[in-house]
Structures are given as structure tokens and as C-alpha cells.
Image (cartoon, rainbow over all chains, first blue to last red; front, top):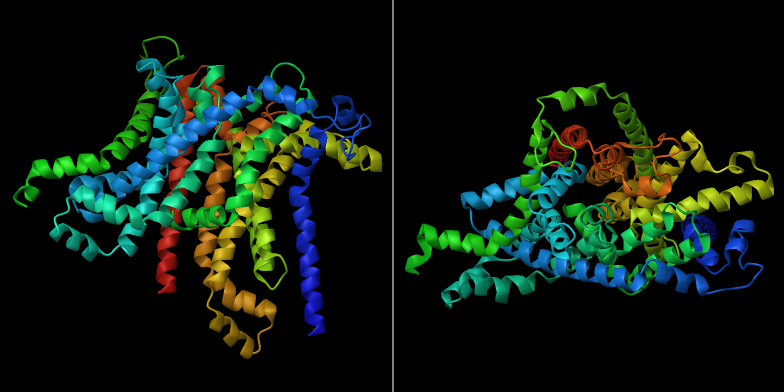
Length: 279
Length: 295
């Protein structure tokens, strides 16, 4: 017994060491965001700089990257896209799982095949179609539309699987006999039963959209519309980077997500696993 | 009731339910996909209104472009090493975390943290670590390998990319392995122990064969993610030094949006697609075979 306890101890300390290595980069950024530029260059490893702790980096960085505007943009784009993805894909999945029509099967097959298309194949045509033909780049709505287009197939599969495997069709037949139309059946019976999958879909898509850089950078070139990831690029322009501001900007980027993670940890982890394993 | 079998009723029903999703999906993925294939047969600089038809000139140019193939080779090597390391580390972490150890949930949540943050920000964080913090460690302690920035050496910069990818993805894959490990039936393990297996034998003969599908999922997820790396490549090395770490996804971007050669860029993208398609087909094939084995 004693031997076993000891073993768990070794495991625990081993994991702790790896864990420290994992969070060390974050830690480095946080301590350096509180130093003056001179101190960062001279001693990036020191806990506190020679000139003491300063919060001015945060103020300057927030101003330079227009943090609050970018935050508002990111929040707006992520929330609207995610809500619409949940609505559209749950409805599409419902009709595809309940009707064996040619159109349903065709759409489903196309969605499966589309999973093999990498983003790089679509980025040039997207810019060329929506910029060159329709001239609607630089609108947040365009970006939201594209996020929806990219995410509906994956989300539809999640809903499709749940509806097929967990929602009894007898329930819907009963509602139909009671006089419910197809849309009412969906709204009052099916949609409420999809709650766990809705949570999964929201988490996966919100994380992806929030962190996406390439698509927004192609669509939104106007600095007023920038999302958070694009805004960080400001610090890596032609001018040599001011390390203090940069560190502060990175902390500003990380902190909102970490706070959310602290509260929703279990849901986020479960959601990500469900999304990866079923998809 | 009487209307429910007419074609019009079905059409309206389909459009109401699947219409919005289908419209966005078709307009953002399917139409651009085919339009993109058309683009590979034209030469377009991004500005002029006419797209001149050039036959297969773009493809022959791409096949002759040694830099593209070099970036593709680099991507393959980077992906191969990353995938192997990610999966080994992820499995070891999952195995340790699911054993009887204090603070399981804490470790699980902690190792996953990098995946919450976009590749761009992660790259910037590590750029600071490699170019400042590690250099400082190297000079203070007089360690030769660390005393110059890894990002300014072509080979070490690739190593840096691999390290960051392993750091990021291992936490994600760990979660999938944990799900796999916890679904291995307890009585199978007990039976093994009763039959006199030691820990290593239980792992090799009982647990690993039960986790085939987890391995397939993780390996293919990490292949596709590594192969299409762009954000991290951009923020950590920007393709440098001297373009030595420019991987395929980034090369396509440069070709199209920096060199303004959209036709050739798209032709390269289509080649990337072909590779992805082959990988997906292999995945589906192995997945099917797996099901047969399990049944």
C-alpha cells in the first residue's frame, strides 16, 4: 500500500512539472506586460522590473489597437454568427433526418464531401466573387454570412446525429395527431430536446469564430471593423515592436477567454470532445 | 392533411427548414469551390475586369515552381514529426491523468488551455519566448544552443514551429484519448489483472486494442490541422528566416495576395485540396475497417 501511494506521488509531481512547462509561456507574457520596455529587454526573466510595476502598457496598448472597438466587433460577429448557425443547422438537420427526399439526401452528401475542402482552396474565389463581382467586402454582415456558410455542415452533422439517435419519432407523430404543423413540432418538441447539442455547437463555433484570423483579415480590411486577432497585428507593423505594449496586448487577448474558461470549464471541455469525436 | 403530399408543400417545407443553411453553405463553399477550379485556368491579377483564359499554363507553372514543392515538402516533414510527437505526448498525458492521481480535473483543464486561444496569439507569445526569454537563459547560463534566437536559424525555426504545435495540440488530443480510455470496459482490465498481467501488459494487450478509433480520430485530426497551419506560421516565424519556414498554406497566400498571381495561387490550393481529399479517403477507409474489426 505504501509503495502505491508513493507511486501516485511521483505521477503527481511529474504531471505538475509538465503542467508548469505548459503554462510558463503565458506566465512570461504576464510578468513582462507589467514592466517597462527597458526592463523587458535587459531582463525578460525577472519577476519584477528594476523600474517597478507599471500598468501604463495596458492603457497604451488598448488605445493603439483600439481594443474596445475590436472587442465589440468580435463580440458582435461571434454572437450573431453562432446564434444563426445553431438555428439554421438544427432546422436543416431536422428536415434531413426526417425526410428521405432527394433534395435532403443531396444536401447531406454535399455537406459530407465539403468536409474535405480546406479553407485555402476557397479563400481566393471568395475574395474574387464577393470583392470582384458583388463588391460587398468590408461589411460585418458578409463576414457573418461566410462564417455561417463554413460552419453549418459540421453543426448539421452534430444535430443530425442527435436527432436520429435520441429523439423518438413517436413523439412527433403524437404531436402531429394533436394538430401541430411541422414547424410547431420542431419549435415546441424537437428544439428543446436538442439542448446539450446546442451547447456543444455554440462552444465549438464560438471558439473557432472568435479566434479566426485569416478569413476576417481577407474580408474586413477597414480598420474600424477589425476583430481582435486582426487588431494584434498592429504591433507587428513596419516599426520595431514596443515589447511592453505587445505583451500587454497579448494579455488583453488572453484574459477574456480565460475568465470565461474558469466558469464554463466543464462545459467547454465536454463540448469540444463531443464535437471532435462525433464529427 | 390533404395538402401534405403535393410537390409544392414539400418544396416549401424544404426551403423553410433547410433553405437558409443550404443557401449559406452553397454560396460560401460549393460555388466558390467550382469557381476556384475555373480560376485556375485563367490569369488574373486581382484588379482587371477580364480574366484571360490561359489553358493549363498555371498548372505547368506550379509544377515547375521548385519553391512551392519545397514548401510542400517542409509542410509534410513538419506535419509528420508534429503528428507523431503530439499523439505520443497526448496519450501519455491522458494515461497519467486518468490514473489515480490528485487534481485530475485541474490537470485536464490546464493542458487544454492553449487550445482556447487562436494560433496567431500563441505564435506571438512563443515568438517572445524564443527570441527573448530563451536567449536570456542561454546567455546567463552559457548554453550555446539557446544563446541565439532559434527563429533566426532555418532548422531551429522549424523545430520551434513543431514545439509550439506539440504544445498546443497535445492538450486537445489528450481530451479525446481520455474519452477513449474511460470507455474501456473496467471488467476487461480486471480480467487481465486476474490473469496475471502487469501494468504494461494490460496497457499493451487490453487498453490499446480497445482504443483504435480514438487513435484514428486523433491522428487524422492532427494531420489535417498541421497540414493547413497558417496562423502560427505567420505569427511565429512569418515564413522567415529568408522564406525557409514558409509552409504550403502560407505560400498559397503569398502567391495570390502578395504576388497578385491569383491563377497560380489557386492552382496550388487545388493541389493542396487533392492531398486533403486523399487523406480523407484513407481516413474513411480505415474507419470502416475499424468497425469491421470491432464487430
